Image (cartoon, rainbow, N blue to C red; front, side, top):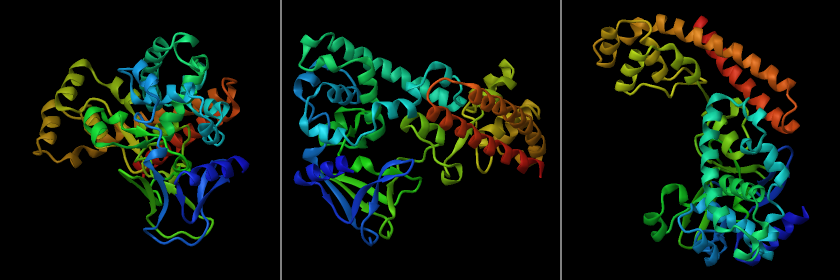
Length: 384
């Protein structure tokens, strides 16, 4: 708590206003923000002035010049490594430790453990890894040795990966009249103190807004003293949350959760069938959520049950898709049963594995159990 109190003293002395809220360690969830009094809907509980934002504009110019052409993500991460700023040391003290980040973020896991991720998470991780590799290539080339800029001896691949993960998981969307038109959307990001202590929930109990003066976080419903306040990172599946933020919500707490089916549906089609699906815009992107397999999945599986003319007639709206529903369900059932069998195998592999940390393996096993629950529930619905 001493580090949190120092952060609050530092932040409030520089214009951050907390009204009716405060940080608090939450068992198993790190630090969160809770109400310290009765809060009404629409109350502004936190304001952070623009001057305290860590952004492209506030990054030291030598770093920005050396990284011309790099993403804002890379520039902010490099600055976290290179800057020797006593103010940031106060902020750094409440950030997740390198060990915690390494345990929670799949990009830091050993390859043997990454290989046990669900297919959708693997696809997301591949893209994330490619983005990091590109950023590190630019940053390492810009600062090849300690002589290039003061503090460059602190810039290693490991320290950059740690900082890169902090930026990836703790930034807020932000634009200025200049950056809105000059930078791509993925570069509209800033770090800000205290506000980054708000945890995510699917619906959020606070709304985030900003203007030229700074950020404001306001309640969207009433809170009692001791209630945790949350913000919404977005409508994301647990695979996305795991890869991008290093956590997964309980399945029943995440209405946006889903699992990908591409690995099981795509191999079912002959080349000619694939071409027809591609031409119609229905190739890939097959998912199962808590209610049903998506329309894309059902449309693709229908191709295995009817003639090409009948399949086209459904798309054209001249054939009732319900006519083929029982046959589509039978194909889906075969897909889901195979998936369930593979899930049992994945869980067993994780339980035998010694790769990575205990915490990482626990999170990964729990994620597969969530997916199994989605699949088993879908099988039950079809069989009923």
